[in-house]
Length: 344
Image (tube, rainbow, N blue to C red; front, side, top):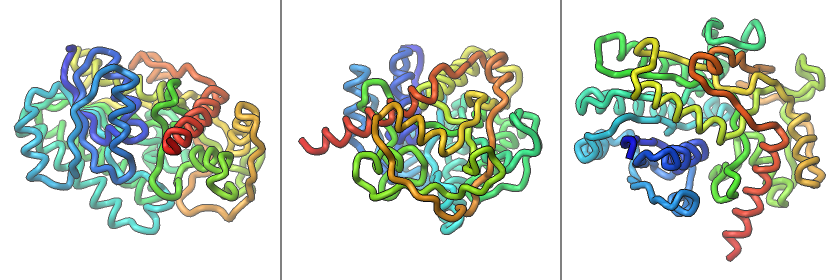
């Protein structure tokens, strides 16, 4: 084994794909997840894909007593990749206290545990929401951090500061914040993908569930934005490409290749696609005609954003490979495979 890595939120969407990539690269993986937005059967799917079953701890990172017991049992960790967080922009506007408690306190608890048990390497799942609505596009890592458009975005900004300040205080921790854009798609096996509990907050699962007939229609939140077709523009990235960026980041620190103790990188494709362009791609790759309506704008949404990936490509040594059509096709394959599996 190359080393032992904790993946928090490892049964979730991005966490499960990252766990697969870690195992495929020869790492031992342990997962912590409270299953608030995922299913335990994901661990079975990870085992089917990789032939290896990661050790799974069902627990909440807010529980300091249980987390300390975990660290005592796993003090040989080589690093942590931290995904576990509440993540819906719109929901964060309506229940901000939940987002502040869940996203900030869990970060504090993890870093305190790392200091106590001398765990050195930390990859933080950050977001392009830290930029707010940028003045210039594409957005670079040097863009100013503007006021957040949502409590969710603000928790990402604060958590970056918590990580940076902890490292600056002299803690023997190295950290990389990956500011990624909009992950969609699923693993080529169709065994893992995006599976939100309840009503989806992200575009793609709403698209696939509508196409499958689980939802009557898809709502496009606004068609009067300052964009070519009036819908919001995002930098959509395939989740497997994104997962691979986390492995490169953790290996950068383990191998002592980081230029400083704290670094941040944009993780995107460098291309912006509108909501209507994603719908057209999905209709092409799935052969399904989507029933969608235009709804009022949603609180907290940024109009348009896509990444300048120069630093991520050249310094981190990572590059997105998959196309939008590959993203939408894999998402539809996952939806069909999942629905077939639960009918058995």
